[in-house]
Length: 299
Ligand SMILES: [Zn+2]
Image 1 (cartoon, rainbow, N blue to C red):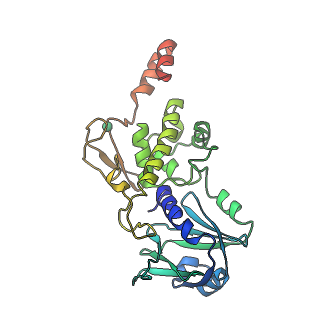
Image 2: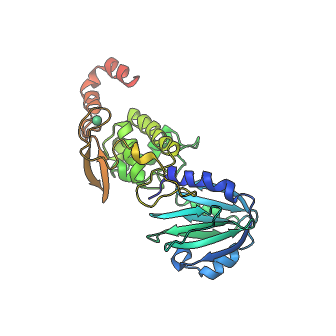
Image 3: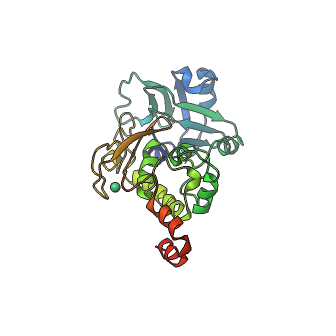
């Protein structure tokens, strides 16, 4: 499923294709894409709209129109957008929608599993729609270590499940949560509320680093994710843990373990990411020796 790095890559590639262009005609071939609305009605509403900007929030792609309306696209599991090349669009049994732009070129939406959604919002509706569903953007200045700590406070759920919850933080999914937890050396089953300040700091840094790495590699193509020009991402070749069961950990050589957390396949290093971290044990043991724990926490 496309996560923040994949959607951001799509956004960056689509923005120059769409910005300033008008939707000359729109064809929506799958009622699931826009339900509960009628495909023909939505297509008619979109026709004539001029694109002001292409933005992203969490895993949502936002096409903002000059009219103040916005088309909110969620790719879910297998959605992808394709800008036609010089020879037009190739045949595709999984094409669900096509937008013809005022310069004569086409942008197509493809979706094998058909979980993706297009939602046309009226002026003023977007912020409220997103605010009720999403936490902070990971690269926003508002997303600080302290904010992350607030979001995780009093939550006994495993840290992995808490990070998958889009209201904790927008944009993380199964891949980048596993990657970030490995970087932060935190076991995916640790109760979210149990992370100490150092761990929160490490996790905050790790989330941004894992996502930045994903964006730099233009996302990960495992099955259906494609760039709008048909190319593939490269992040799948550089995963530290995701999908790497039994392969040696890059940091310590221990075979990567696979487990399930909240029904999701989960990979981690059992040595680097202990379920009961030694730091916590040492901290409780050394509580009578504050000088030592102070030195440790400053590292
Ligand atoms: Zn390791």
